[in-house]
Image 1 (tube, one colour):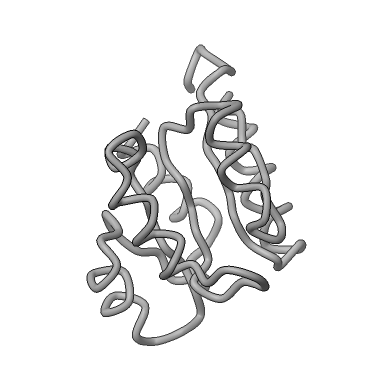
Image 2: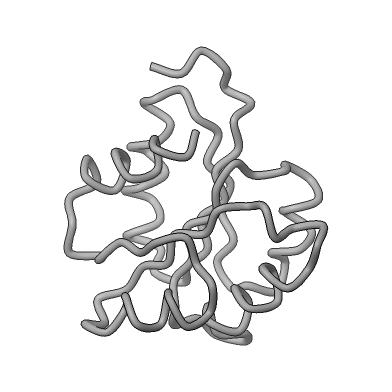
Length: 122
């Protein structure tokens, strides 16, 4: 278990059920999951918590996850932040590679498996 509850993990998704499940799983590990449900406040949340990693859905209202990832990775101030994209979409690996994400997670994975992927970056 992580001893520092200040380790911020940014979760970006408009699927509230999935967000809640992953958020609870990460909190049990002593992490500080911060949630963005519409993508409009992602930059503010990045500035506020300096996330160790961002879990980013490819399908969001407003800005797409793919577009946001491209913007994040092209900005020298944020390009170092690892991004794991996730979706039920079968071509998530292609999308993640195309936009410069560090990896991807299928939403069909269990919360435990998602947590294990996140912990590789913490």
